Amino acid sequence: MGKNLRLKTARAAKDMSQKELAEAVNVTRQTINAIENGDYNPSIRLCIGICKTLNKTLDEIFWEYDDNVR
Amino acid sequence: MLDKKSDKYFDERQIQIRNQIGNQCFFILLISMVIVLQLPNYGITWTTTSAIMTIILLLCSGYFIARVVWAGAYNSSNAKASKSVYLTFSLLAVFMGILAAGIKTILFKESLNIYDGGILRLLVFLFIFFAIITVSIKVSTHKNNQGEDQ
Image 1 (tube, each protein chain N blue to C red):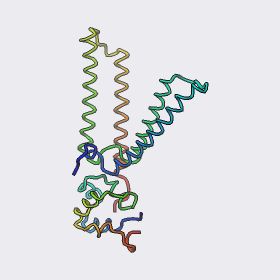
Image 2 (image 1 turned 30 degrees about the vertical axis):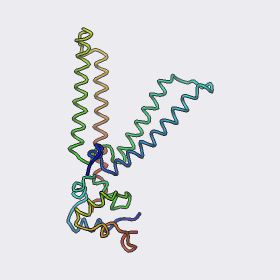
Image 3 (image 1 turned 135 degrees about the vertical axis):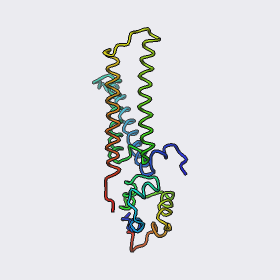
Image 4 (image 1 turned 135 degrees about the horizontal axis):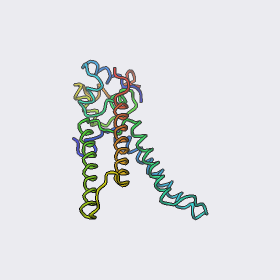
């Protein structure tokens, strides 16, 4: 599981820190960091929470395309 | 969305890590106990069963706490909930202390001496207990906050 750069980009576009996103979805900042670094595979519930917070769809953040997420 | 009580205190990654480490500890505990209980059958007796059981339990719980703290899964993602747990533990300890003193003085009609060895041992135990909890929370909080934030 590679780094999720699209999550990082979407978060940066909303001008949110990892901590702010973590608080919005009620997880620890380390969990968001682990998802971005590809160290943790989040549940669909958390994915939906992140997408709703960032105003993105699941495809836009989590679908694995060959170009962005390895 | 939060249907389980533990979900209010730990996030899903923390629950996953705690379960994983808990399972490891359970099997270490189980295997250690079976080995220790079988040793006397093969003529190996080097200490009492209760002592070795205490050592195994302490080692397993120490391993569990160390791994959980290192993984940043000891304290809650919700700071408010974490504080409330800490407050509950503190109040419970104070209540138990008062209860123990009450039982000793009222039921057993004994005088309560602060320099009594039993009370001193209880105070030392409570001090060490809360010191471990406090250090664990601090380390786990630090682990939760470290890492790249870009």
